[in-house]
Every structure is written in C-alpha cells, then in structure tokens.
Length: 336
Image 1 (tube, rainbow, N blue to C red):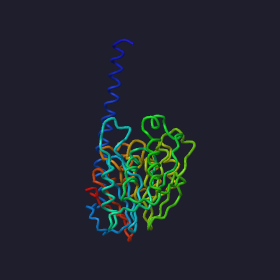
Image 2 (tube, helix red, strand yellow):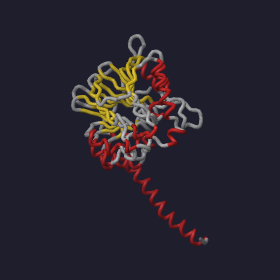
Image 3 (cartoon, rainbow, N blue to C red):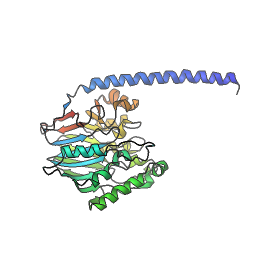
Image 4 (cartoon, helix red, strand yellow):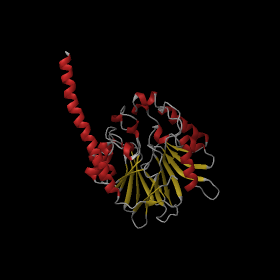
C-alpha cells in the first residue's frame, strides 16, 4: 500500500471517528442535563438517623464503584455484598479499600446498647472483589455477630480464564468460607428463592447456575434480590447485565419495581431498554460516580425510561426508606 493510499484512509477514518465521538460527547451532555432535571423529582434531605421515615430501609453505602447494601427492618439488619476490601488482586499498586468504613458504618447504625452488631444474614451476590472483598474483615470483627451466611458454591465454569487466574475469584471465595467456618457461622449454599426479613419480603433470582451461560463471566452468577414492602418494591441488580445473559432471562420474572439498583455500577451492558421495560422503575440508584456511568446507560435511563438516577458517590451514600404510608423516601449523606 503506497503512502498516498494510507494517507487517504487516515483522512477518511478521521472524518468518521471525530464526528462520531463528538456526537457521543453531545449526547452525554444531554443525558446529564436531563438526569439533573429528573433528579429534582425527589426532595432528598440529609439523613438524620432518627427514623422519622420509619425503620424499613435500604442503605446504599458510598464505597466508590463497589456494592455494599445494608437492609434494615424493625431493628434487624442484614448485608448484601460488602464493598471492595483492601487487597484486590486486580490492583497493581497499594490502595485503601472500604473495610474500615463499612465496619464503622455498621457500628454507627446497627450496634446495640452493648456495642454489638447483629446481622441476621450476609449474602454475596457473586465473587467479584468489588462486591465481596470486605466480607473477611467483617466476619472476623469480634463485635459483629452473624447468624447465617448465603453464599452459593463457587463454580469456575461460569468464569473467563482471566477472572480465575488474575482476579483471584477462587481465593476470595475460599477466604470467605474459611472465615465463616472459623466463626462457626451457618453457611447456606442452596440459596432459597424467598426470605422473610422483618416487614420486607425478599425474592431471590439466579440462585443456581444456567449451563448455557458457562464461560460468560462471573457476572452471570449474580444473585438479584427483589425487596418488597406492601405495594412498593426495589430490585438490587448486583452485576446483572445484558452481555451476561441475565437481563433477558430474568427481566420478565422480576417484573415491575419502583426502585432499581442499577446493575454493574452503570457500566456498559447494564440497564438495557428491554430490561427497563420489564422493571419500569420510578427511581434508580447507581453505586458509582455519576461521571463513570456509561453514556448508553444514561441514555436509556433519561431518554427511554425517563427516570432520575442518583449516584452513591455523589450523594455520599443514600438510604431508601419504605414508609408505612406507601412511599419511598430518599435521604443522603449517610457516610459522614
């Protein structure tokens, strides 16, 4: 190929790529503007921890772009995922995770008069470190008492080779199970489809494994949880995405929910139009920075579903209270 032909190809490529990138940039600005407008639908006040909105609540902690969710009902507590810990094998340099912050939060909101935290259960949705990395530290904390632990058996057939070899999935699973056994905490690997937790009814999805999703990655193992009180419900989507195959398999089963915890932190492949059409949420929470949410996800939320979404990092953690009058009330600044 001569130089003139190469130059011509580069010019053509530039004329295609630059307008395309400019269009994405413009659309991203549009979705951010619309997202900010929609966000005004909820008058989010700072959390006071006085339970004026009732004691049936979902705490979405600010653990950057990782998941840590605390369920609370009638003075009882349970934890879904734990946030990123301090030893993520994917990190190439030293860093601080969120073990200390999560434990401090539990001590602040869930400790009894003797300073003991009682968790009815803990549950890991899947074995990516940004979801379960802090569990060993939580389990080993002396003043945290855990009644039972829901962790389905790790199945390497689900994963891509890089997840097994470089992301440490078998190692974190074994570390969690070893810590639970050392504390004689009941481990339930056959995950039930339903759990009653105070005033909340929990419906669990993808409690087993789909053989046709083998090799699609650990996100395909994600357990989703529908939390219901009365006429209101929320769906905690873990890392359920379109590419994982789970949105198509689960969307119709889950059905409509008032609140959606967006899958996979708002990254590519989460919250497809078809999935949002099944869920039809009124409000969304994303465990991330708003700026890190992928443009196509913002587009689907603002242009298609037309719903507000709130990022836990930008709001310093969010609590969704399910009031006895049938409202979902959001408060922020819970990590302070």
